[in-house]
Length: 295
Image (tube, rainbow, N blue to C red):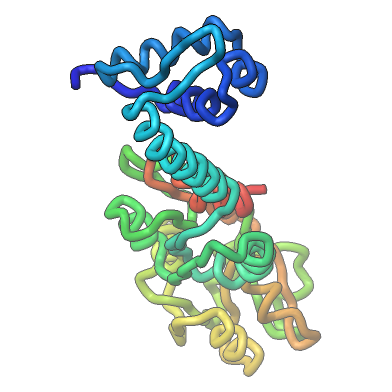
């Protein structure tokens, strides 16, 4: 058989056979009787044999017509079932999204946003992994992460970059520290005091070392730790002051034992960006999380 079968024509044939009349079937299917009759003729041509016996008294099925009716009813039911299943998949979001984010995003922004998203989309699971910004971007480029959040930086072609949140740098110090009376603190002034560092070799550590070098000074933390909460505990104990993002300062240095002041430098206006591997279109679960995080 060199002709393609048209599912709509099979449906019209089934309706005609069940109605016992081309006119009645045409009314049920909302199609002109002449157009329906032509469709059945094309179907007969495709099969190479008559399916109906037409007479002034109506229609009757041939042996081939009875076979097409039997198989056609099952075929139409399967087709309708397929349509509804595909539509249901289109209406319901499901899947797994791999999200990699730096420490300040995990601490300061993601808990509430992810909680709201997962409550609204229970069919989507989010796998969250904390990494330094460099590793976040590499994971996106290597397609090990669907979405990445990290500090604004230049990236290779192939990534889409969108603004996620502002997270400026602050100085956190004990309540009675000599710098606590200033409305904002210059970095050079902060470098004159014992410093608590965070995540040696990470994005923030590298940035502070570079900025100190530009001032012909040295960034040499007395203690370097791997988490913002540990840094704030050391500050609280009086071991030094720290330069950390506003999000971390809000989360861990909000009590009366601390004073928080903006870092008075143009480069302290730190921004977090959302990184994604460029795809068109993005898978629906990924796009849904992206829209939620940016919204």
